Image (cartoon, rainbow, N blue to C red; front, top):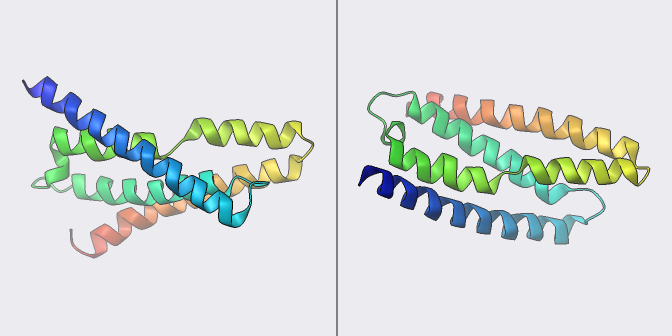
Length: 131
């Protein structure tokens, strides 16, 4: 029964995370332009921030997110489908193949630095708030 509940949490989180990624990425791309992958970067940075929050929350022994089902729903399911390394990789390759080598390198550098900064910020903010 625990495995079934875990799978339901994972499937629901994945469906919601994938839907959120579709809408957020599309919204940002429509408003910022599609020549640079701003939508994917926005999704990955915001997802990194939220996973930092959940990582900090899970480090508290009495935390709800330290138990398997909420973690499966929020982190593995929702954030796993919300963030995307595959889209980042394909868009970076497309920029490079189209002769936009500088843009592809900027995408790599900004994505890595912003995502690492976001996950650290989420973790530190959560700890600072005492959660």
